[in-house]
Length: 376
Image 1 (cartoon, rainbow, N blue to C red):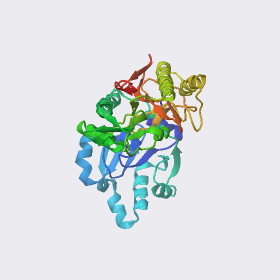
Image 2: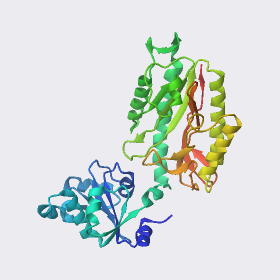
Image 3: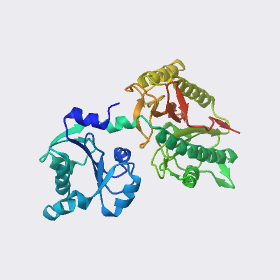
Image 4: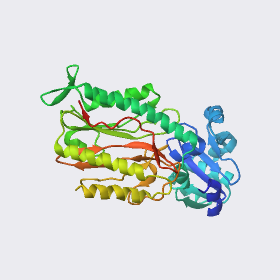
């Protein structure tokens, strides 16, 4: 895989420039620094990349970042602002002073600064080199994702244990004389993750016909003998790495249609896991699952199998690689999900999702929690 130095040289640029806070996954990856305030990152070939940051964060950045650190004062930005008070113009002038006449910018670069830079430099847009580099995880990154998945397994176990301990009353699941709700299960997951130094938002807890909507959030009481889909995608508070996990359960006796759907999804996930390895095509693995579902009478489109088989996971919950119709070759070090699902408006939905790493020998799942459908 090309290094950022190779990308800069091949583009004919003098430097690569990025701008953003650590909410920008590329910025977080390039600096390993966490801050809510946006900053400039500049990388020249053969030199260590450096970040331009406020004085208040300078000492912490020196300790924590893998990039070199320069204050805004040292960069000349504060002097430029005295002459040019419009911020995006001042930033553009400061950047141009440190880069040379030709620069390469990511597509996510702020328009205002980028537009001003076009009057000062020759600008090329990078097609996504850092995102591509992020797809191959280091040993440290893999440990980070394993860690957040271990916490997620615990949170999922507590959520499903609550559903399993419930008792039906007139079709509604109760625990401690109160209905068990999507909100209660979601809160339990989030609180458990917080106890283990992780955080999640928008965890999906749907029931009944709502499970046919893959990304519906879910609300209200959980029902007896209806599918409950729990999908959570937390990140570690400190290092920012995500995982992604889904289980589908029923408290009671599911319909014959749901039983058949669950069996097909379980088989599809096993098939996908068995096919993933270094060099395998993401599109071919996805198609194999499509074909399996078709053999069992399940189609694709607005109902049936309606989404990709999987996606990369890292500093973003959805990143490269793709296991779908446009997926390319998988590589050792990719961390990805395997998440087949089936969805029908009149029945509901079933989805199973594990996260793991692609190796030369296959797919090593980080997800350890069992796939139990009927809770008795």
